[in-house]
Image (cartoon, rainbow, N blue to C red; front, side, top):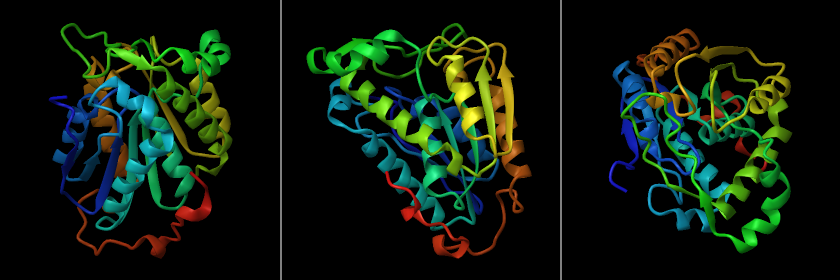
Length: 270
């Protein structure tokens, strides 16, 4: 899909990894990633497998495929940066949390926008196991944006088998939330037609031992990174990342190897 291309930018010794959402593309995070890159950080924004092509492709990918792409981008950043922060929207935030669970000492911090961890929808909870065997897709959830004239580049259909994989990712991440030690900044829209408040409660309960700063967004819906509160997200994340790294993203030290800080990807299974 034109506009769904991944993005990367070379900057200082602090790396920032961006993860887009379910059925979405890098387009939903591109302005945010460009803003962070302009502040002097090294940035990776990959396109997740099965995304940005056609919705049928998501029905033949697994959540481990999506996470695998995030892991590869993380390793690229670790090879040339002293510290790496993870940023994500919706399912992208879920994948960033998984990265922090697998690499508890390698992820310096997380900036999450409307992270998803569960749903209270009865059809998703009770009918999905059977529905995924009979129905390939249902109506999409893209472009939940309040700002007039703004459209998210994403699938107009929700792949049912792909959504089942998302529920498997949710369960895996929820089970290991107590492994997250990285501080996090969480932006949450007051009105969100995609992710319910349940996810926010589960995050705060599961990561009770973390430093968590939560900021409410009053003028945006789910895709807040393209919405009215986007400037606050961009500026707030840059300031928060700088406050949580000694080099402020522009140091000249030699990048630390993964083993140097005890980062061990074998600590948790994906």
